[in-house]
Length: 113
Length: 113
Image (cartoon, rainbow over all chains, first blue to last red; front, top):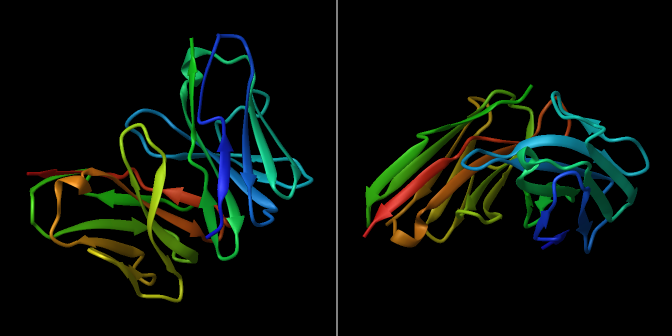
């Protein structure tokens, strides 16, 4: 089946720094990718829809200047958490729209210290 | 706006019991519905995907059904085992809002040996 690779799988960063997370569709082209966030013991919440070649669409309550999304190619979308703070510590998961379904990455655990 | 609800929120059963997890969704114009398993601190494992034109899918001891008209899906687990202990997430893709995948809050399952 189709594979979505997410990198890194975990990252620890200092408060105030920026962190970039990559989401790649390895064997199919994805014009649309999605980014989710999961806080401990909660479900996955959609943050934004990433469209190749255009601006991302953010869900209500998600700060677009804090969570920068770039979908520069048909196989890569990146999420940059800018000026990270401890409250941004979370599990971030991406998905890519493939043939007939969405395929999910394995997630990135971000810890901001 | 699609909303996905899962009942029960938590479930504890003795080993060997058959059990049913319930999922309901508000927007029936979905492309597909997917059941995932998530172990603590881990990513998503896709269990079963039911396309909108299908009524059910089976994999081993798992059977998922879909009733689009009533906005419901069930995940049936036969002969539960301690290794089945995890959080089970229901996710609906599509609807009038596009190809977003919206997750339920999950059912935390504990199977006692």
